[in-house]
Every structure is written in C-alpha cells, then in structure tokens.
Amino acid sequence: MGMIIRFGHPIPGALVTARATCYVNDPSLPQPPGIRNVKKASKTVFTCQACGYQSPKWMGKCPDCGGWGSLVEERQAVAGPLAIRRNAAVAPAAPVPIDSIEIENEQRLLTGIHEFDRVLGGGLVAGTLVLIGGDPGIGKSTLMLQALHGLAGQGRKVLYVSGEESIRQIRLRSKRLATVSPHLLVVSEVEVDAILQMIDSVAPEVVVVDSIQTMFSGELGSAPGSVSQVREATVRLMLTAKRSGIPIFLVGHVTKDGAIAGPKLLEHMVDTVLYFEGDRNHIFRILRAVKNRFGSTNEIGVFEMKDKGLDEVANPSAVFLSERPAAAAGSVVTASMEGTRPILVELQALTSGTSFGTPRRTILG
Figure (tube, rainbow, N blue to C red):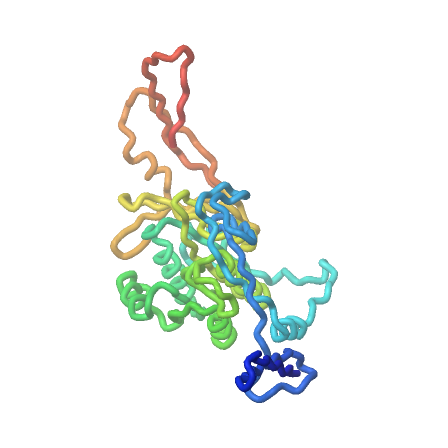
C-alpha cells in the first residue's frame, strides 16, 4: 500500500514535486518488487555479566548482586514467525506413570579414572549435563581429554569440541598426553547449531564442549561469552542431552572471585557442578563436587600434575601428611569424612601474645 504526497512551492513557475512512498508490511497484501518482509526489531537490554540481572537502562551498580560496572548492553532479537512455527512444530511430551519407566538396565559409564568416577557418583549417567570450572591453566582440558581417552579405549565413540584450540593444537596436546585413539573425534567449532547437527550426525556416546563461554548462537546479536549467549548455548545443549541420552561436559571459566563465569542460572540448569582447584605452582589438584543430582556433593578427587598429564592419587592421606614434621608442637592428625571415605589431615594450633582486651581466634585453611 502506498501514498503519494505532493508539496507545492509558493513561487509561481517553481513548482517542485516530492514523492514519498510508505509500504505496510502485511503478508496478506501484495508487496512491491524488491520489498521483503521487514525483520523484527531487536530489543536492547543491559545485562549484568556477574548474575544475569537485566535492566532496560544502564546502571553503574547492579541492584541484584551489587557489582560495579558489570551491566553490558546486549541486543535481543524478538522471536519472529519462523521461530514461532519452529517451536510449535515440536510435539509436547506426553506424561507417563513413573512406575512404567524402565531403569533396571541403566548403567553408568566409567572413564577408567577412579578418582574422577568417584566424584561423579560412580560414573556418568545417561543424559547428564556436567559443568566443570577452574582457574586458567589448572588442567581442566587435560582432565577432559584423558577422560575421553579412557572411554575411547573401551571402544566408545566420543567427541571433543573445542572453541579455543585448533584441531592441530589438540593433536599436539593429545600426543604429549598419550591420548591418541581412533574413537576420539575432535573438532574446532563455536556455533551452537553446527555443534548440535554434528552430534545428531556423528551420534557420540559422550561429548565435551570446551568452553561454554566461547559458544554462540547466530540468532542472538550479543557477543560470545555474554550472559544471553551462555544461557542460550547451555539450554540448547541441555535439551540435546536429555533428548538423546548423551552425557555432555561443559568446561567453564571462573571469575577473579572463584565463581564460574556467567549467570548463576548456569549452575541451576546443569546436573553436576565440579570445581578443579589447586595452585599452579604446585603439582597437586583437587576435583570437588558442589552439586550432583546423582551422587554425593562432598566427594573429592586428588590428582597429581606430571609431564604426561594428570595421575590420580589413590591415598590422599599420605599426600596431606607427607610434609608434616615429626614430633612438632601444636600439631595433631585427625580424620575428616570427605564424601564416602575418611581422609587424614593435619591441624596446627599456634598462640601468640596480643595487645587486645579480648583474645582473637583466627582459622586458616
């Protein structure tokens, strides 16, 4: 539909005509040549990169978590007719009686790394989504590559998706760690839709995505690593894991405070949250479960970093007491339950004079 507007000049003989055409984007009306359906306008919001709080305007301080300078502008595309039709085409799941669900033949996948399997609660459950976080260079990618190699050694097809390394870099690291196997497939990809299509076509038994902060969806206008991109990628991978029954590992970065980068919703969506802790200047690493829907949340696994990768420590008590001086004053050994096993640890008590009126007690460790 068009309108013609003419403007007349007051000077005789100098009549100027201007023509303006306005088109209405109505699919039921015939469209002029060269005119396409207008794309839905995107909505601008400011999202806190620490907690995921969203606001229509910028604020210096997040009212939810109290972080300063954490609100970043993001553009969220409004769902168009294509997205609505795509969602409507998915048939809703039908409810079934809980006693009719077969679980007798349900078996957990074992990676062959006993400390790792213990922290997972005895192995991998089908369709589980595991998030593992840790400081840069602590050994997250090394642990994931060794776990996949253990599964590939059993003849299982596994897939390692890296958004931070090329396939040649992965091959060099795999050679150093002696984790080369024909059943271990690697790919360098960051687009979520391409990864999901790859999972459907390859049909691996376990998938590792390293890292979730590098993944992005082309349907969103925000940059990779933003709250909306991390949330969208996690939701898509979670639905794939539940639908196909394939366990998926997500490697996550951590902030300077030690929390996993991204919205807090990320930890709520996954089934298991693991933290890989340790000092990069020391050789020992601790894998700790802070959330596990299929096992204990108090389990820890102790590893030792070597030139050929991570070695599990079968007796953590011997490691924790290896540097304890004999017959030292103020030192005692006690037993602490970590998950399903007791671990011997050392406690030290030191006293010193104070100028305060009341004594002060400080605990470190």
